[in-house]
Length: 281
Image 1 (tube, rainbow, N blue to C red):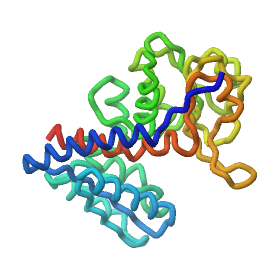
Image 2: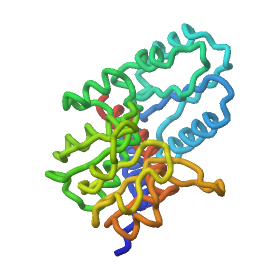
Image 3: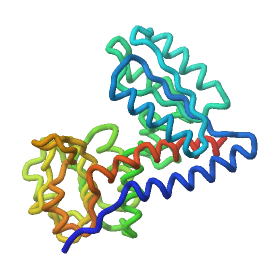
């Protein structure tokens, strides 16, 4: 058996077309969706990420406000700017690109963003809304993973899902979203003994630990769905994920490639959250 690839690029394009139609409808009513993106400092990777996000906004008709500040910007000045954006009715989402300079507390910055505009879904209140089943914003990468799983036509009710990783940005919210979809969820991590004992029982495995070959073919149940969130480099410098793709694709029913799987979905779900925020207004 050879697994069917879950094409994140194709699904992302489909969702972005839907987002563009919704953005156009709002703009026609005089309520164009707006996303503020704040970059502090000169981190090269952050500059690329911000540029991609701004371009994605333009492609779907979302107005982006890109604000770049020097690395010596004070924490209070950043908090004051976020407060102003919170009160700006033309801005429906606020994103502060991480990492921030060391003198700025990232937790304090994230918590300063109004929950109604926390389109990254990172704040304590957003996490609490997800935990309690309220209609808050979902963290973008797990949200994208759910869309990828849904695209296979799989009903998660009663399925056993294993999440490898417990980060606040992927692992924990991923487990909550799977639970909301009525899956039975197991969270594994670096302290889990004999990871394969758990993954071999799983109908769905989401690998999000940032270490290549964490999941190998002998650890996967035949016919399982495997979602690879990892972004690593192999010995030749080639981009790869957390799973042994070549081995697992002969066992799984569906698998995401790296690149071209989860990656394209993250910015797409940021756009989706921004549209949802604008529609709520």
